[in-house]
Length: 340
Image (cartoon, rainbow, N blue to C red):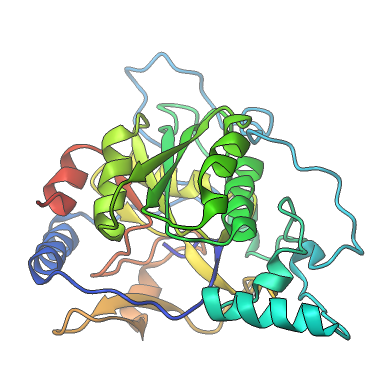
């Protein structure tokens, strides 16, 4: 799904791949790819109109008022560090600041010194997505499903974790965001204990679940999934920032096809200065995820025939490896991911 809206701090990743899980995942994606029908021509600026002949729900599109976020963003200071997604400029640093900077980088593999000085509520400035994406509308009937946002973290920096939380609250429609679940994969940092729980308790719909011992990303996501009450499960990394309108297109595709696994186009936050690399309105090149026979994830250019199938910029790009950013809950999630 080429829907620019999520940004992630890039840093080296460590982990292992479970072969059985990976093979099941590939099999599922192949079956889904072969069995799922091609989507019909979509009208520009909206997803496919559903059959509502037997429904009693309101007609027409959701209004901006109906899609207001859970939490209004505070007024922004354009001169603040990193404002509007701009890079953090450190300038001359004292010896103590240099030591703090190096310590944070060694621990997190990104510039924590910069992150700690950027507002937890920063916006990303002008929306530079393609006009088709910015102007997209969504049918009220049968309506978009609600979602539980699940974020797994382990010894994440306070500022990046909380900026992720607030970014979702400032952009996800209140009517669609059931809850946010933060799953602690056995963190040892003190700031992620009582202080975190006290902070998010004030946000009402955010809660923390904890694993007593570290079991890894998938087990932690399963824990969050089992506790979630939303119709759709949305998984995010613990160091993301989101544009307005990132969530609705994902939910709309799942409303069309409940077994779909959908992902936005993920842009990069520079780990050296927290500069947000914004989407290009009319990209010259498109990429999609894939797996090789070693089950290693990578990127490939989208084939020409797939690009020709798209009718506008909101039209999804089908991939054999569909990253688990979002997943329909219950049957499909348990069928593919649950293991002991």
